[in-house]
Length: 77
Image (tube, rainbow, N blue to C red; front, side):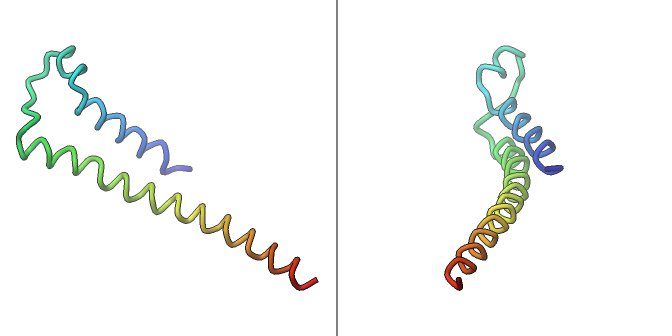
């Protein structure tokens, strides 16, 4: 659970950076077509997405292994 909050904050920052409405509202001068902008957004989103996917995969695999053991026990009876 400790990974969800920081990664969600990183995603919110990425949404703010990429939102055209917020860019216009805050009068930010950001070139959204440049390679630097694309690299920065990718560098923000990719690592946090990778970490969250690993975290949820571990959670899902734990749940599958518990139900698998229950099914095997029922079959042995």
